[in-house]
Amino acid sequence: MTLPGERAERAERGTVAPAGPAELLATWEAGLVQHDAGRSLLLHRAARPDAGTDELLSVPVGEREADLLALRRALFGERMQVRVECESCGEAMEFDLDATLLGDRTRTPDGPLRVTEGEWVVDFRLPTVADLAAAGTASGPDEARRLLLARCTVSAVRDGRTVPADRLAESLPEPVQRRLAEAAGQADPAADVTLNVACPECGEATPAELDISSYLWTELDNWARDVLLDVHLLATAYGWSEPEILALSPLRRRYYLELCADA
Picture 1: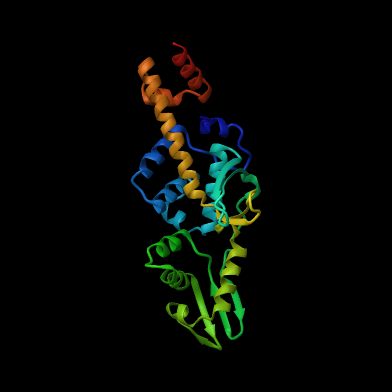
Picture 2 (picture 1 turned 60 degrees about the horizontal axis):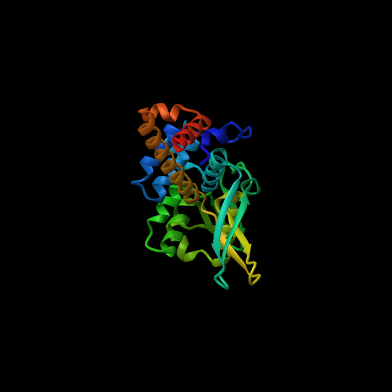
C-alpha cells in the first residue's frame, strides 16, 4: 500500500503537511477507543498539529471538513473511491471521485450573518464543531435543531421585540428557518458535501452525503493495519525495531519486503 510519505513528496503548495508514519500510527491507536466525534477531533489535530483543542472545536464545521479533505489529499492522493446503492433499484454503484473537484477551503465570515424575513430579523453565526457535537447528544432531530438554534443565534427580533434564543424553535416560522439554513449553507458550503449519483441501470439520481471524517478514518485504519503487518514481517526477518522500520523510506521498505517474499 502506498505510504503517506510518498504522497507528501508530491503534495501541492498550500495543502496540509502530513505527519510521519509514527505520528499517524499514534493517531490511529488513540482513535480505536473513540467514537465518531473523538476520531474527527484526532484527525483534525493531525491536519492542524499546532492548534489546541479549544481552537479546533471553535472552527466552523465546513472549515473542519475542508481541513480533513486537504489532509486526505496530502496523505492518499486525489482519487477517492465512492460506493453507494441506488435508492430506486438497489443497484450497487462504485466510481472514482476526483477530490480536487470538491474544492479547497474558503474563508468563512468573521462576524454574524443576518437574515431578514417579514417581521423577523435574526443574526446568527455558523455552527462550529462544538455545536455539532452538542447537537449529536440530542434525543432526536427536533431537539438537535433546538440546540443548534439556541447556540448559534446571536440575536432574534420579531416586530421590534427580542425573542430569547431558547424559544426560537417554537416561535420561528418555517420560511425563516429555511432562510437561515440557506444562508448558512452559502456561507459555509463545505459543511455539507452531497453528491448526486446517476444510476447506470435505471437512470435515477441518488443523493450521497460525503462524510469525509468517516471516509478518512477508514482509509487510515486500513493503512495502519498494513503498516503494522510490514513492521511484523521486517522485524521477524531482520530483527529491526518498529522505529527503525518506520524510519525507512516507503520505497526501501517495499524493497525489503520483496526480498523477504523472494527468500
